[in-house]
Length: 100
Length: 495
Image (cartoon, rainbow over all chains, first blue to last red; front, side, top):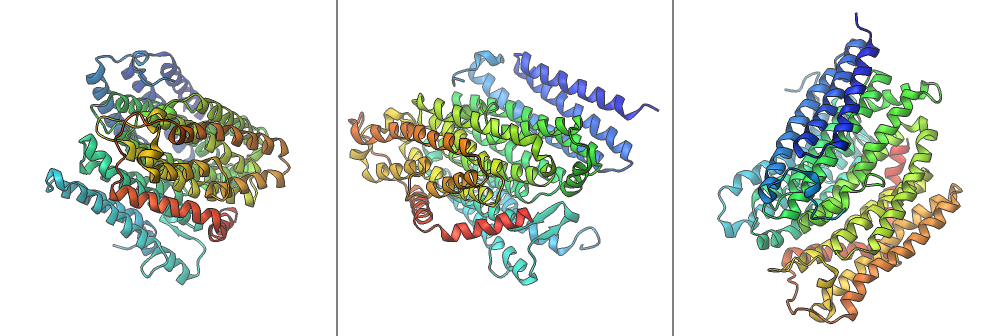
């Protein structure tokens, strides 16, 4: 049987990849996919922990996270489309009318 | 229908939230039947929803507080401990209902001018309020996460509500990306808490964490990720970059709403997390919170000085206010928490008041959120100028306005717990904040008017301004009632 720690380390690696992608990528859709990767990394650790504890709480949490991710993707893509319509670009560096 | 999984208490505690949800759906349906010039009826319906929710919450027959009084219970638990209604939750629910009602009042005319007066706006605002309520009463990680996401996703939509406006688009995009990122980090911390305890109930997590050895690296990572996510939500430095952009780009009335409601909700979550599951590792997060609080006050106050846009300036001032409130967590005693409670309620009135004046400045072809737009306001509309002056004085914390009371308790608690250095820094930054608030005041009172378009005070804005003004002055002059209520609230959370 695969020990719990393998799952948790894999989840941590995936999560870090998501964070790195979010920080270094410049395309809006890629940024969005990085966030999804982070959420799914967390899902993996929830499922593994839930299996380890022999109880369902973690798996139920995963369903809710999926629902939230879907809702966020719906709203996010809608916003990305309206940004694209107004500016014809998906590069975050070019979307900077508001100064940082 | 009621069996071992559901009890009548479950329905009772969620009644305000259920009513708001029903009215949100109702607004969406009736919106289809309204002619364009009747759209204000959507706002009336949304206000009715807030009214019903307030009735089901308050100390009247059928109300939640009344039922709790009848049962002689300090707190009601529902959904097997996933939701707990105590005076803390009730206080915040009142705050959210007030914020929603005042925001709806100031939205009506603004949306008419923008030509975007549709029912979804009010429906989404009500749903955001439901999310905040769940956040204030949740006692379980799953409940809290769902409440948080319901709130923030609704606010993303509201921020980008003006689809054709580039600033609104961009603000929504930045808010959404950074908000989703911070939710991911918070969620990772939650998964660690679950891993440490094998439960999603905050109280079980608290007891598991208190049994871990000191300096456990897993606890450390959990605390850091949770703090990171929470600091993002309240807009504390170094996670504040989204906030000025979101405040500047969002429609004026949405800026008003999100500077008050979601901020208070994020603080409710922060207090809950720090005082229940993370209470035993106070030594770990205390240095973190102190550092973040100082950085937040510094960046917020200093960056606000150079702003020429009033909404952006209020955004930076919101950051600095979050810094002051974090100081209440640092001292962590009764007066500190009481200070945060009072501060949040007072902030709701004074900030919504100031934003209502900015909303009134929005006229045809004038966006009205630059400091230059406020030039000579006193000659055009003395009422608006004087009201703005009072709200700005209150934001700066000058007695006898309400803003003073909130700051007073927080500074008092710092001195009680021996954080003299922090108290001195905080007071110095109050002086800095006076400077940038007075940039608006000098513009209003000493400069010549650049145009002669008088700001339109519609009935809704008048009502919102009246309520904000009355409460700002009332709390400032006679603070005893709110101090007493906040005291009960703190007693319930510290128990």
